[in-house]
Structures are given as C-alpha cells and as structure tokens.
Amino acid sequence: MVLWIRDTVMGLFRSSDLKKWDFTDEVMFRGGSHFEARVFKLGGYECPDLFELNESVEHGGSPGASSWVLRSANGAYLIGRFDGYHFEPQDGPRNAEYGAGYAAQSFSDEPRGR
Image (cartoon, rainbow, N blue to C red):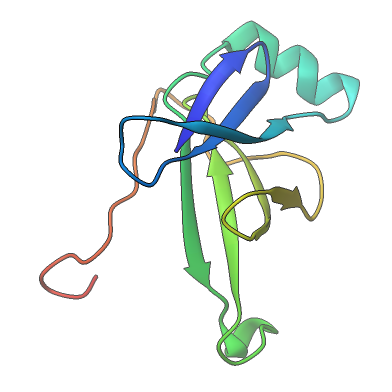
C-alpha cells in the first residue's frame, strides 16, 4: 500500500493480514527548483497510486520486462523498479497532465482486457 505521509513524501507499507501494516520504504518526489515550485503551488500529493506497466518491445523495452509508476493526485509521477518492499526511481518526477484532472486511479483485470 502507498500513502501520502507529508510534503512530497510517500510511504510504502506491506501486510499479510490487512490488519497489521509494516513500513517498508519512503519515496520522495524531488526535482529541479522549477518542478518543485510548480508542484508545491498545485499541492495534491494525497491519493497516491502505484502500478506496474509492461514494457513495450516496440519502444525499446525488454521482452517480459516491466516498470512501476508511482503517481500523485496532481499528476506528478515517477517511473522505477519495485521489488515489493522498495521503490527505486529511474529518474526525476514527470508531469502526466497540465489541466484540471485530479487523483486518477489505476485498475487491473478489466473484463475486456483493457
């Protein structure tokens, strides 16, 4: 599970019974001063989302490889590796949107395979 902790910091937690949760990692959205100034004005780090995406071989990915995306409510996101305990960003934060969108959430196993 991923939770917004404070400022630009997300916390990752695990549980085997959904009653007792263990903290496993802390991830901070850090970028250049322009990024941080824009993001702090927008706010919106609550409602974080962490999901896996398969890499496209057609776009330079390896067969069977995947990356993880950690996204905040304001559209800022990090791409990286996640081993179930720790998230390691591959680079700095990016922006998914520049409009009025807010807190998009991912889902999987959609019945039509989308």
